[in-house]
Image 1 (spheres, rainbow, N blue to C red):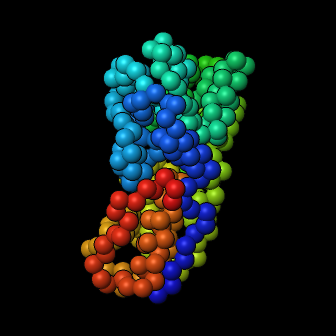
Image 2: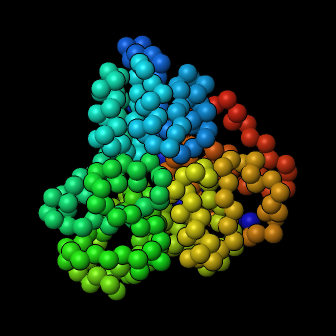
Amino acid sequence: MKITELRPNGFCGGVKRSLQMVQEVINDPKYPRPLYLLGQIVHNKFINNALHEQGVIILEGNSRLEMLDQIDHGTVIFTAHGISEQVIQKAKDKNLHIVNATCPHVNKSFELIKEKLAEGYTVIYIGKNHHPETEAALAIDNSIILIEKANEVASLNITNDKIALINQTTMSPYDIKEITDALKDNYPHLTPIDSVCNSTKKRQDALQQIDESVDLVIVIGDRSSNNTQKLRETSEKVLNKTTIAVENVEDLNGHDLSKYQNIVVTAGTSTPRAIINEIIETLNTNTNAKFVSQLKGMNYLNS
């Protein structure tokens, strides 16, 4: 059996930066307690469980604005996925100590949206509804049009000749192309602006270049991670490969891996290195035993 680990994988630069910021806040007593996260710092349950063990309160809710209603004092940490100006202002009005861990690439995409709006463009945004990055992008202006799938294009009726197309940073090239092609049929003057982050793009490119002989793709990452799920979709729908999506090594239980000869392993941008290593080591040693993770209780922030 051949095992190939695709590169890059594991934490991207934006995730590393966000986790480092949070760890510094945890370690520094000057930050007022309690420490709150507006949602998950990144979409990975093992990382968020590790933060919870260190005393960080992770809030959940329909929107970031609503989550702030749960906080009266302390420090609020904005996650890597971006935050709206309305949420920032509300946190200031509540006199909360603010730590903004937004990924710089996400901030750059938001600035692109603002630029195009200022230039008189109608902005169409390709994103996943209710994803925190999409939530923050749509909050920039009420005129922004959200598109999730190509079949939604037919319902649009845009009269402005200046139309800019911008996307969530973790979308797959396949989704973007499908929607872009559908839009160009109706709006030939469309201006597409690719804002997929480089880390997401490199993972997608590496996956789409795998050898025809690969008979199994294992995608490692949280089920709530959009870029991880886009890797799975590319493997299944674009490459037509047998695909197993796992969050850690124990998710391999129940799969007969011995029947595969050429396995490729890839991982999302918020997948800890330790989880990837454990899966690779397990595949290289024993594919028939019951898999039990040895990583329980680990602080994945430094993985």
